[in-house]
Image (cartoon, rainbow, N blue to C red):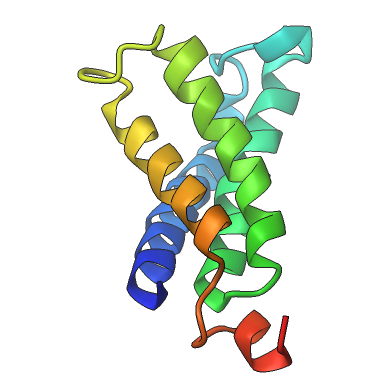
Amino acid sequence: MLVLRVAAGLLLAHHGYQKLIKFNVLRYKFMNFMHLGSTVSLSLIIIAELICGILLILGLFTRLACIPIIIGMAVVVFVASNANIFAEGEKGMIYLAVTVAILFCGPGKISVDGMLGK
């Protein structure tokens, strides 16, 4: 679980960081999900990828951190990619599957949650 959690967390945090540093450019052309506005949609996915990705790396509030990632990746796969999981939605589907596995299995023993006895 350590390897799965850290690898997924690092990759997600990297994607979130890339979106954060390009925020001013992306906010005008990012998907407007549920008419929230592209800036709000971009902010939510940055929080899901960057902040929750860091929480996954640490193994802190792991199951709680998985929920925003699962929601964000479900939107990527089923809305932005039109459920095309073998082409443009493939990366999102992998992140979705890995995050669901972490949600069900928990963070593992080598994590902050494991050390705290959660």
